[in-house]
Image 1 (cartoon, rainbow, N blue to C red):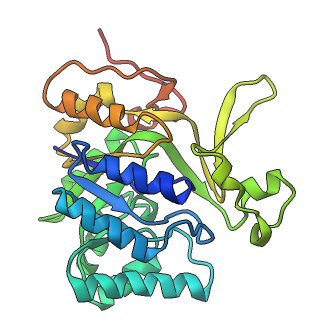
Image 2: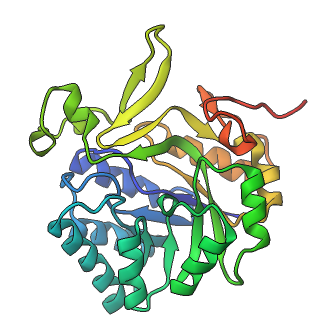
Amino acid sequence: MKLSLGPLQYYWPRQQTRDFYASAAEMPVDIVYLGETVCSRRHELRLDDYLDIATTLAAAGKEVVLSTLTLIESESDLKALRRIVEFSQMSGKFAVEANEMGAVRLLAEHKLPFVAGPTLNVFNGQTLALLAGMGATRWVLPPEASRELLAGIMAARPAGMSTEVFAHGRVPLAYSARCFTARRYNLQKDNCEFKCIDFPDGMTVKTREGDAFLTINGIQTQSAKSYNLLEDLPEVRGHGVDILRLSPQGQGTGEIVAAFRAALAGETAVLAGDFCNGFWHGRPGLELIRKAA
């Protein structure tokens, strides 16, 4: 089973982002996803920067995939998407992860194989077959899906289609045309002052009782707790999953990757933190279902 490093969901300063991917080149991951998936206003790095990083990662033996935006809202967003697709076609170097159907359409028109990202909402075998017919060769299970749902889709999985499961990180729950971080500061989305960059792991939202409830990340809403399938790996493997996706964090990503790599090698691995795995077990997402003794 392979490990992937999912696309960076947060807005980090340029040098911090470059330093992170320099360290990722040394991490025991097989696949690295690069690109902005949350907000098109985040411009610390542009496509040329990501391509430069991609070249370095590929030289280190990583498979690199270019991820697209989840929400296309303007002509400039569409132009950026076209540039990614056209680069992939002309260079033949890096595959593309499609995170909305506009990207799927463009990739299908160019007859390019692609990764069907988690926000394409594949919840049944018919949808997966449709995407396979358009060129998808890998799909990512929506993180809110259960193991039972995965089993049903796997039974109908098209030949040659690999499966990736979100295994660690704050769960992306929803996207909106509004920017919640900007609204927190009474700013308009188009004049947000890029407040996201002050929160390397998003902004925690608490209940009136003081319990962490959600995480705000610009237009994206995430879980407050980090999703963690480390204890569930034997069962995940039993479902025929090919790749485990780990989401980059502001601190400790290297330790997370090492723990999952050790667990896949059959070694004892433990991570400290406030975790959840309810979705995998068909329960409310914020619950933590522990492995039976």
